Length: 106
Length: 115
Image (cartoon, rainbow over all chains, first blue to last red; front, side, top):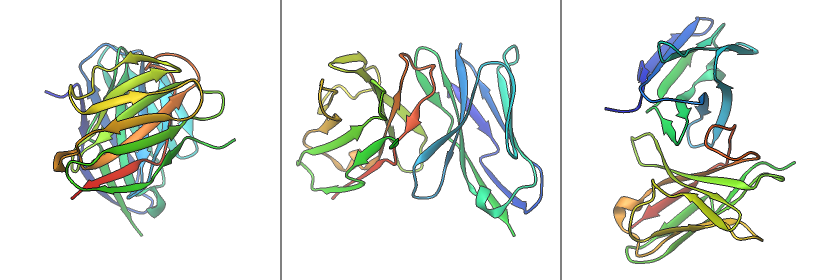
């Protein structure tokens, strides 16, 4: 069993839709990270959070420490949001989810 | 302020050769982490280094792989006698503060292909 589970694995949305990606973890953590990886490209850190909620532009990340669960929301999705979104947790080590591949269709 | 730099971006090696991957952290960062992303798999932690010290190498394969972060110069991930299964994207990240739990900035990755 992976320490970090993400759902869905793949997601296709129409431009403008509200998107939610979920992440559950099974280890003790100090922080949870949401990363974005574009095809053939590098990795960008979107959020690092240890409690509550953070917002950056159209992106919102929430975490529930008691339930060991986090969500990444994208409001008013756009084709340029198409990427793989990776949830990772850090404590004694860094554990990654396998990613959610998002495609936003114009 | 340049971000994390990795070179080469693409590396092709034949089985049995050595691969050297370099990572220059962001200015002011003295902590470097290496990760491997195998085809169709997620990222996996390999090693965490501070200048001249290996802090955590629990994710490193026991043989053929080594890493260093000298006092001067980039961090180097070295793979000896490469095999086809080493083909992957290798990412490095750096942080200003110590520990896995601090914000890390990722480099663009080195894509290693072993023929």
